Amino acid sequence: MYVGSFLYTPTCQSAEPNQIVMPQSLVLASNNAGKLKEFGALLALLDYQVHTQSEFGVPEAEEPFATFVENAITKARHASRLTGLPALADDSGVCVNALGGAPGVYSARYAGEPKSDLRNNEKMLADLAAHADKSAYYYCVLVFVRHADDPQPVIADGRWDGEMIEQARGEGGFGYDPHFWIPALQKTAAELTAEEKNRLSHRGQALRTLIEKLR
Image 1 (cartoon, helix red, strand yellow):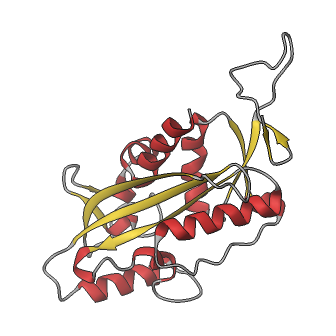
Image 2 (cartoon, one colour):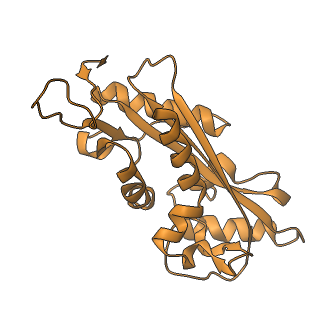
């Protein structure tokens, strides 16, 4: 079938006998290096040739909304409109229960501009210092659009529970990972291997759900 101006044919099928079918291109609506690294492994499960929006010179979209899903839809449509390709976008963040769900959708810019993981973590820990409840969770919404005006975007989400600790641990991950403690594993998200994190994380959960919906 046609999606926008592109012919979509699943890679597991051939349109005609002996015809080589090329994978459909997909643009990932993110310039976040940490996310791109994680998605690189996770998106191997999709029958798409994945490109980052930076390959097309697409600037970051505005994220003016108070919900993850609205921001993810906005980013997906933005990338698709400027590239003419199907697009996948995520909006995610850490939600600390004692802070009323903050930083939430503002996780990347919690301490203001320019964006800084170090300053974001410092602010989060300072805001949380007076609270006994350190429970928190990572949340992710993924949105896939076949074209910029897709009336039925495919949406999936995932949640990863843990708690925030004051002392940073681990060299992996990004964002709040060095402070995000998983009690069952006695490790922070930054101490997990890439394979462990992809299996457990909010982003990994959401992408597996999305893949099932796309099949």
